[in-house]
Image (tube, rainbow, N blue to C red; front, side):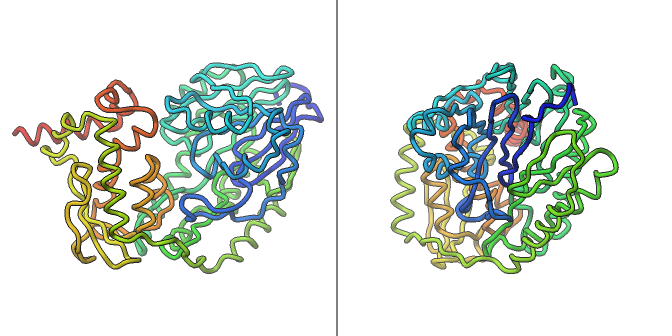
Length: 441
């Protein structure tokens, strides 16, 4: 490690992407998700948490990487008693919408927004640096004796540049080890296997760039738990395979809920591996879907409200070239829970009803579409949860483009001001310019 080991410097494993670091009399919890489901009940934790609400007594800080419910779990934060919340500081990346910060402040937590890639001092010689990656973020925690780099779900970061910018070498790298979203239809085995390999490739890139002394794979201890997405478990990376791949290159530590680990000490991961394998075997079948279906009349009302919100927040007439060039086209959705299909566009809402499945681009539940109409993060929730089937190639992309502006609205950006956002320009402008050139030729 960077210095002599301090007996207070240890990790207590919570679950999935959640853990607590204790160092020099300071306790900092990362992304605590203890129980329940995530992404419209699409994900469930692989193992049962041992960390309880009463364990937050004495915690100094909670760092929340981003708003996804497997990292930002509002139900957990609400259950922390008010007198305990008053003594905890929430650390979160600086965002324009400030939804997470506002939610936590309303609950009585002290809150600190972390500027992008600026070192912020905590108590007793600890510092934290938070780097933004789209709507996600990573953190680099420095204690007097050990450095921890939490890469969580970040996939597009320039790891080489980040590694070169860090003040001290990385002692412990914690990073996601399997895909965490829809990865193809049932039977698309090659596509799912490719995404699993890509995740390992991202881990390899992080190891080359950050050069950690210790690897802790995490943020993938979940299973796709509903009938529509259960097949996605088949090709997800298993923790025992990840452990075997990396253990001879650097100390690789697998932690199970309730485990305690002093960074730098020898740790036998065998028991944790056995327990995860047992947990996986306990989920041979999906859980029954219990979503409440929405009627077509309810969806139409929600679509009208959604259209009103889009026009209130954006100069929609300026977006019309997206339709003229074909970049944003109507998408046809079949709702298998009510056996009805529609054609939908961000320009006008529901355009047609009464479509059959063979006329549609995607099949899903009405609850998924209702969530997209109601919340800016709805499409993201839908895609990560994977509770749908693509009936026509490219259907998911068409749906995404119809909800992209609403998603940016939820993050605090409107159109045309959105065009000033570097991340959005880099993500979308190349494809749009290509479309415009084709349209004009």
